[in-house]
Length: 474
Image 1 (spheres, rainbow, N blue to C red):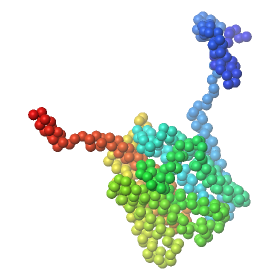
Image 2 (image 1 turned 135 degrees about the horizontal axis):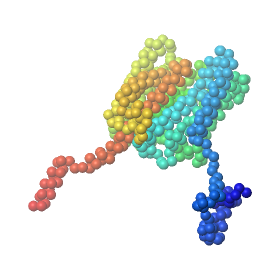
Image 3 (image 1 turned 30 degrees about the horizontal axis):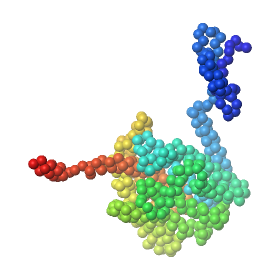
Image 4 (image 1 turned 90 degrees about the vertical axis):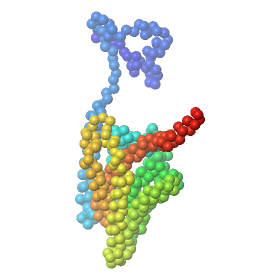
């Protein structure tokens, strides 16, 4: 019709049936090479004004930049809707009820918000390691299917969406009188998190979930040799002691059906602020790490393992002396137990700070951290800069001191302050990870050189061997 022959492509979907091979290919197989020899590409027809251009079917794929901007726009829109709905729900309550309700709602959701923050920061750690020639997969003994920083960020994105959405639904339903539906929101969220972790089928990063659960099992029961991933994860768990304590209190209220009520506010309540379970859960991560150090001393015999165990044992008085405030007379607390608590807090903070700088980091060997493979702004700003080390040391000291505030049960009533300090402790651990992994990578690279130097004979052995060879020659 348009003055030229239209040449359809061989793989055109119009020439095949659904799920079958290309029709032209089948014809070519039946007729031999005749089809291929007789076919002339339209662009090869020299001088032909009516030469046709083959029809090309191309899928319309949106630009990655455009797609990313669209996702960011949806994310911001979702954040605005959640923020506006939550604010209106809180303002609808009376002033007396508002503080109690926020305190309770914050208890259920702040542990998962802190875990989400930790996942985001862990993705940044992996991104820096991948660009700094630090083989973190070898350090943590990961297989080839381990999660990259992009997949970690994808998980963190979904956590960032799901947790605030559940919290917004809780606020909205409670403010509108739907107490039973509101109480079900944190229960469903916690149940979904547990099921996602223990789901036995090969979906949702099964190998990575199994790796995490196996590492947690080895931490709880250190009956085998302690590896670097074991005590590395255990160190991170010590920074999340407040998270585990709040999870315990949340589950306690769910089990006793105290969600969306004020029954827990009574001091003698089984899930109240005077519960003995609070210090017990707070101390568990430190006890896990303490027994790891004892196991390490049993296996290797290094004296530093005992000193490290002593460091974790200094957190025990901080936790239990603070909990005694609710079980002793006010005069006894002010005159005797409070000075002991302050003294143990200072000892724990300074001991932990010294161990971070002198043992875990070893600043004398840093060479790769923030030195990226390709030129990057972050590498230019951070690599080899003196201010980075001053910042890390100074902030680590300050946050080590404020960390005892969070471990103290009698200071938990100001939930916003405690949440801020817990978030800052996670940030301190995020900084700690950079230099701890860098130090471990330097140790791994130095081990072959150490083995070679141990196998090389000494000068006395060389002289002895040469004299013996001379005697045989005679």
